Amino acid sequence: MKFNIVFNKYISNYKDVLFKLESILLDKKIEFKSYDIDSMENFGDFTITLGGDGTLLKAAKFYAKSGIPVLGINQGRLGFLAQADIENAETIIETILNNEYYVEERLMLISNNNIALNDFVIKGCDPTRTSKFFLEIDGEIACNYIADGLIISTPTGSTAYGLSAGGPVIHPSLDTISIVPICPHTLNARPLVVPSSEKIIIKTGDKPLAIVNDGYNTNECVDKIKIETAPYKAKLAFLNKGQFYNVLKTKLHWGVPPQA
Image 1 (spheres, one colour):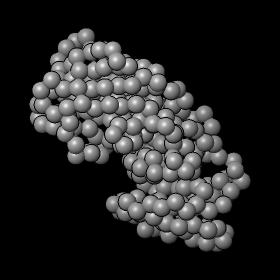
Image 2 (cartoon, one colour):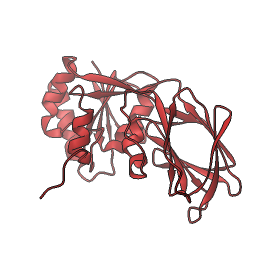
Image 3 (tube, one colour):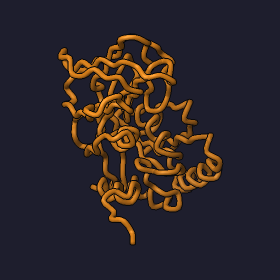
């Protein structure tokens, strides 16, 4: 087995963590290549990321076309997706070599050649003002909003920005898309969950719209945005199977009763 190691140079102690992981691979005589998150290449048949969830998201999208699983060793704050710990690096490598890990295929979205694993966030190009959003789903006019923005999310992204904006938690195995308005100027706008087969079009009535892809601004201002399911899925690797609800509890304190 050959490994891609993808690191985030903007994390303060990445060199120490990278050195530790590379030393283990060298000791085991395993072929690998290390890449900064901004200069990834296709080499191995398994990828390990060193960083937070953002690092894992970017790497997972890059290696999705090749069907390469990606496992994240967390150096960020939350580690909702990047759950592994560098202290267990040697055990992690052995688990991968023994094929004892689990792979989950995750739906992604595409808009004008931009791929999102978490979400597309649509806002006006002037972020200081509200905008008009006309939402069309599979050719049918669905909603008109005056709001700060719209979040078009995958199930993976439902526990990210969409959740903070009042959207639902969606199990990552489901093929659905959630649409969550951001601070709408009405009391009756609610999040909407639609099948992944539906094509979503968002138009504007006044100011052009900007699109943010998994937290990265695409620097585009347009009058119409089309979003649909990407033709391939990301492959996320985990050391333990069926940990979704446990991670909700431990990372987001979901379902935890108030303390006395």
